[in-house]
Image (cartoon, rainbow, N blue to C red):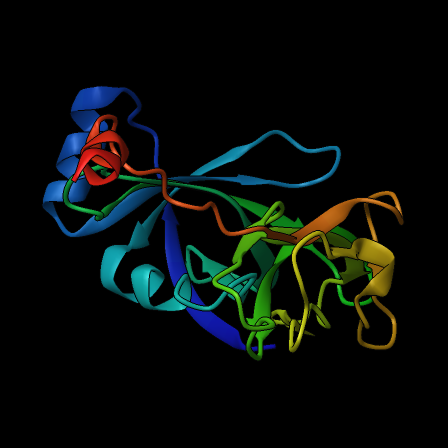
Length: 195
């Protein structure tokens, strides 16, 4: 798991106009949540944050107003639907050793059995509980040789030490769907029979 250090500044301006001004300066408005405390509104450097968020469940060493470093994980990220730039981010303060619930990417590996079957990702990400400083970047699941009708359940996925499922054991994560036979357009079969 990677840790990234980012400096942030508290902000007192709110609303759409203030958010636009912040983004115009290549920064991102955000809110930091901490257990039992009032949410803290901050401004974060846009480029640094964008690079950090490329890693799933990145652990951010957040320095607010030059004070002591605190650990945070991203909880919600809003992006512009067309251009993809960051519009807003919610961060959750965590402590070393604290257990958190996050979703980690599921990465299938291997080839399905021959026959043109399709792999369906029922869950794109697997909900797990892990220590805030030991969140896996993802899990790899072998789909080699699976045939139509096969399914991989949450309990079938091998998790790293100290990581537990945060969903029911029998939750379907991946399943193999049978290839659909193409039907001939109406009338083509009749013409071939008449010839």
